[in-house]
Structures are given as C-alpha cells and as structure tokens.
Amino acid sequence: MTYRSQRLMKGNKASTINRELACLSGMFSALIDSGLFFGDNPLGTLRKLKVSVTAMSYLTASEIRGLLERLEGDSHKIVLFCLSTGARWSEAAQLRAEHVVNQRAIFVETKNGRQRVVPISIALEQLITSSGKGLVFPKADYMEIRAALKEAKPLLPKRQALHILRHTYATHFMTNGGSIITLQRILGHANIQQTMVYAHFEPDYLQDAVMLNPLRGKLEMA
Image 1: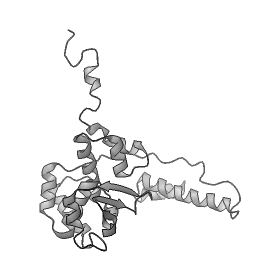
Image 2: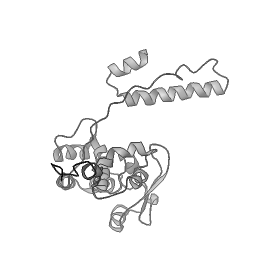
Image 3: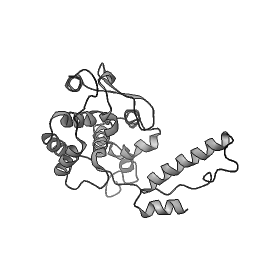
C-alpha cells in the first residue's frame, strides 16, 4: 500500500502506522454504518505491519539519584511522581489537584480512555498538593528533564525519553517482588500481554527451569 510505504520511508514506526490505519478503518466502518459509503471497507482485510520489539531501558538506583539531584521545583516533583506511580508523562502533566485525594492519584486523561487510580504515599501527596488547586505540576519543564535524564544516563536508547520513568517504575516493581497482575492494573494496560514484558524481572521468574530439569541445577547426575 502506497500510504504505508511513504510513511515508512519518512521514518515512522510500524506501530504508529498501524494505529493510523486502524483509525482510517474505523472511519470507513462508521461511514458504511451511516449509509454514507457504499461497498466494503477498503482497509478491512489489510494486515498490520509487524512491530519489532524495542529494547527497553530503565534507571538504576544510582541513576535515579543522579537525575533527581539535577532537578528542582515542579520538574523534580513530577519525576518523583512518575517514579512513584508509573504514570505516563502526559498523565502526570495533566494531573489536577482535585485528582489527588486520600493518598490516591486518579488518572482521568489516559491513553486508552479508561480512568484508573494508583495509591501514593502521604509524603508524596503532601509534597505535590501544596498549592491545593489547578494543575499539580504547572511549571514542569519537559526539555529540562530530558536534558537531565541524558546526563544521568548517557546511553539512553533513542525514542524513549521520559517514558523511561514508566519503564523504571515497572522494572523495580517486579524486581522488588510485585505481582504482574497488580502491575497491569497500575499501568492501565488493556491486556496482560502488554505487561508481560516486565515479567522476567520477577526474582523467581522461571526458576523452575533450573530446579526441575534432569540435573536439578547441578553439573552431573547424583
């Protein structure tokens, strides 16, 4: 398809093109249902482009400290918040004071349109709701945080930017013994497959592969 080829040549990711075509397909379906378009959906049988798995990176404890030391004000607060909740940058940037209640952060404007609630500590709630109204982080500077992030982690993979804060939350959550089902609910993933990319960080992940094989973790038979 010419459209896909042109978009790929311009450097757009397969996942982005798939989303665009899904929207176009939905438009044709709506036109057909309303009687404004006659014939079959021209995109109804189009296969999705194969999406390559992107290597995800995360911040170590020392890199987190280095990042936080480089920031202050709302930029410092929003990073603390993202690392404490796994929130996307857009969700945190749009968070309002009335959406932080009783140690709960309520995300209304989410990627999939589904509202979700994530618990936060008393200390974090008091820190970010001092103003009491309006946006919680009105002066958070995306470019300032991005620059500080690159200093704290020079080998940051391309196109990850501040999304690495979300990866960092999920990675440490699983490393510290968290449940993959709970993580799915916290991150707001529509299906568990999206969350399973973090499963291998669980301390006991596939440990049976070592202890239940014929040699039971040894180098020779007993």
